[in-house]
Image (cartoon, rainbow, N blue to C red; front, side):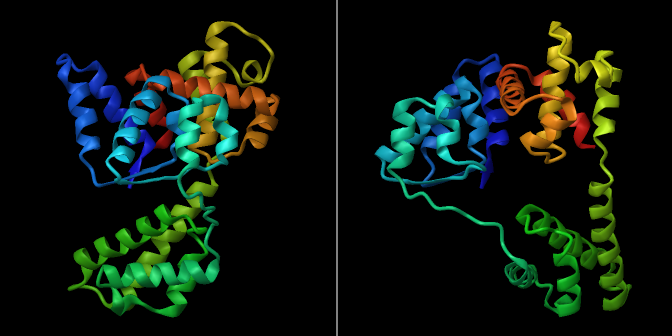
Length: 272
């Protein structure tokens, strides 16, 4: 499955490439797929040029009776103002299915399946799987990350350490990763914004509308949503802004990302 961010980044590279044929090559590549799966398509909806190109590819695949699977983290109605009527019509002709977060038992079954797929059956201890399942919160990417960690540890230490030693190190690593995520403090975002934009936390939370302040505020909103996984209400409380203002700020950054590779590089700083 391709993420919308990766699709958007590839599209941007083709747009800014010196050879004008790159954009057509980009479209042709995706039009040739028999199956296209794109995650978080609501991100594309905030980028007009990427949006239009995606729809062209989408139409071509539909006309060829090929299969397309797209996911959103919201209802289609919530992004209708970002989509054209023809896009909404196309999307609604397909099968719409709500995917709920897996419960504890389902997470355990996913882990067991991933262990089998990666030849890790000898580590399939019910106690271990139950313990690590509490740390990945039903997030499939985190589950895959945990399994990849164990694959690596097995390759590196499988011949020099016992199974119990490897499992102990593995559990410690997963636990430490979770604690690191929990320790993320929004103050870190405010401090980094202050350093790069010379805009203090108090000013970010103010109603000042100077261009540099607004840009810094929007970036802060985007990072809190996409890196710190804060919802719009939580971001609104932190920055003393209403839900609509926060949504608008995040949308603005999404639009700017389409044309500004430097902004993407800057935002990547917050992921480390």
